[in-house]
Length: 168
Image 1 (tube, rainbow, N blue to C red):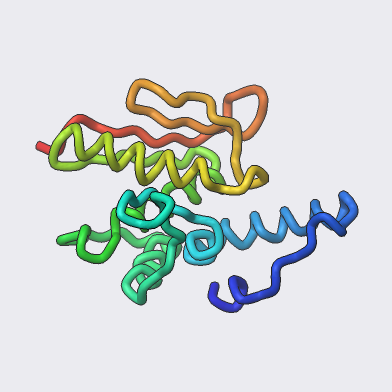
Image 2 (image 1 turned 90 degrees about the vertical axis):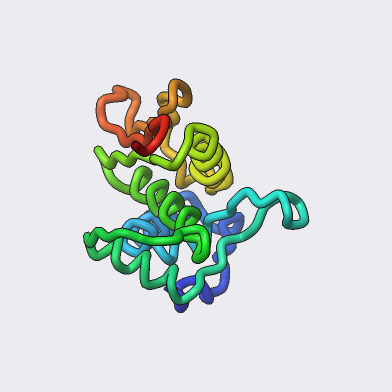
């Protein structure tokens, strides 16, 4: 992921439509197979304490390892997630999986409704909104505790994320 992030940016304005298409496909393939690359290159998060109210995702070793585990199909339990920015990381990975995989679904649960809604709005929907236009599928539903994206105009193939009232 680091090698890809450190590559010089392509001049999309200077490319013809076929060059742009190749570049978009390459980037989509990269974010599909390597969540850390997607996070490092494209994710911004809402943070009122930072200048401008947002921050560019900068991974720590713990987050690199967490992204690797998710990409490898593993699951696990995380204690004290706030201390290692795991909520930001896991939520951003969920967004990447939603846009790169058909029928990917996630559910956010926190200790109370206010916290869950804050994570849903500030972590998931904000980060999705800051992605480049080429990476965003069509938003099909953005209400009723749900965020659903679809990949074609028939609206049959899609992914979603919901939030639940509370963890009991």
